[in-house]
View 1 (cartoon, helix red, strand yellow):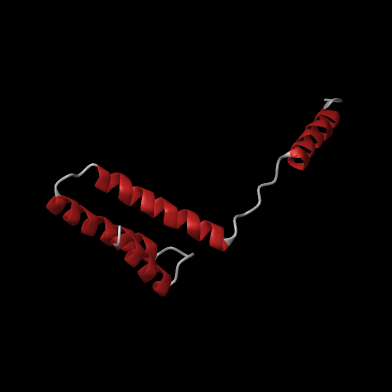
View 2 (spheres, one colour; view 1 turned 90 degrees about the vertical axis):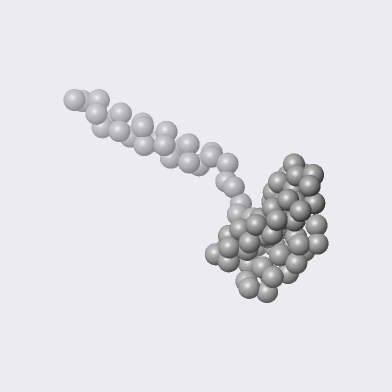
Length: 94
């Protein structure tokens, strides 16, 4: 029982020391995050369409993917309505 205060103090010092030395991650800026999201959608579209060789199937798959992407981006905090439309037009040109 005599060691309990010392153990608590020592363990709290270790915890404080850990949080002090822990690497701090900086949040990404909004334009950087937007670009990452844009690249992610381009990559997903490319990977999905790469598998399909038939032009008709490819077109149907592309339309389905673009609808899915638009629905996902509708709730994304980084993009407003105009930016979603611009991104969808950009992806549709692929």
